[in-house]
Image: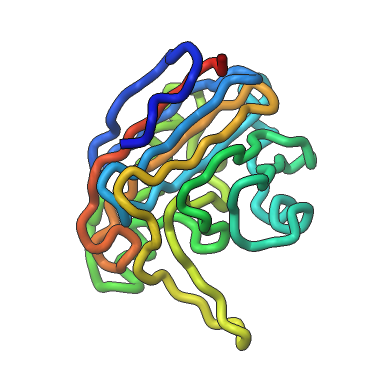
Length: 206
């Protein structure tokens, strides 16, 4: 397990495999996502907590940061080009911006699997308490998921790089609604074909 961050812990819980989680992270507070057993993908969206029409924008994040991968020092930008979160610590070093979330429909097309648990439905469960729904699910981040891109443009979801206890720390640059799905996917290597729990912490830095 990683060391407990210095400061006042406000939230500390384990999200079971395949479940959603959501919370508002006030400006200046930190969110830590811990991959407890390694190789677990965590799908992630975030929104301006006071105006959720402003939300994470994958395209602007990649354009402004200059990379398709997220790592320590990366800023997550909104569709208004405002910072939502900054990654201020990261023990994994590689997170995906292009693979998107699994859905019942894409699982059927890709794997011939019907009525499967999926991250889009989890996002909907996580968004509902905040008055948001299907139209608010946009291209998302996949923490700890490895999606390499070759020089010819081919890409694939392959074995992850995260080890047990790896974590990513996000500093809220405004009041942010964070929503995640602890991915239930078992048809590709995103979770090592074995979804596992994660730990989520929110704290005020010392």
